[in-house]
Image 1: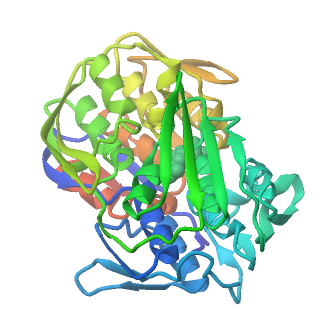
Image 2: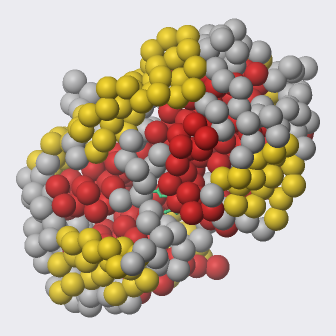
Length: 446
Ligand code: S3P
């Protein structure tokens, strides 16, 4: 999907946000349910799938590789899988759009099946590092022809007789872990990923539910995840809960907008994803989790959020993997807090949809917020947000949504240069927030 023209958006001081909302389905689980369904035997039925551009690209890719993928009239999705080793060379390019997760996990899924596929993405994805997956996948016997710097576009030649691999993750990345485990599914023998720092574990949980022979061992503070290849997966029924990374935006909006009181229903609360909630509570945020329950192997609950006076804290570095996508919106909360908030261990923020550390800092500064930063850290001085700036989003949905939230509580309106990329992860974002009382509209502040 391409975005030929930019669509600026602006937001201005909101009245108190009130109401109960649901946010769209979790992006990580949505990509995985389509991919695992595509290589399982039989049918997989998914309800609550995130129908955003990133995930719809994955659906198209799975269909191009031979799976049957259909949206039903009731909004659920049916996937007829091809069985392990059953994916076929696609006729055209596989277009992953803006999605790192789609591209990297699909490369793992294809790596140990003898097919040839050319993978492409938009300008943002084409700048992102792919060596982090092509290096371990090459050890299975997969061959890659890449653009300069190991980036997209690239052509993957899947291995006919893949060899199992043991790989220690050099960075905290669930995408790399998942790519290696997925390559292991169609590889005879045992493939092991050693994860020195825990990252989101949806691949492990969901593969187990599909019947994979997968084992997780805790060895000191590391996790050793092993999969025995050559065993078929069985189609599943999956209900995808709300995405905590999307809930983060209305959650911070309610905390910083005086008088707000909202409930965000049915949010996935997997402990590898809840670092932002812990951090905001530590900052004095009034957030309570109601109706905690288990659904489809994941903890879920409703988030009750009330406007709060926040205070700056130092966010522990080892919390970064559990809130890696949430630093942009945390930086907005920090700019309304009393005192300074320090965020550290942020090296991975440099290689997201944009260099998020630089994009966040530039956006804060243009709106009057004082900051300091280094290679992998950012400090935000609270209480200095004035608004009035138009933020460059660099094709990054989370930068866009974060600064629209800032405008709800800043004295002056804030703008973003392009709201089009919000559709990659959070269709209906503007309408949902406006339904609570926010004032987000097309155009730029005067
Ligand atoms: C994701 C993993 C994270 C995260 C991304 C989704 C996943 O990326 O930033 O939005 O679904 O596995 P990394 O694995 O590169 O940290």
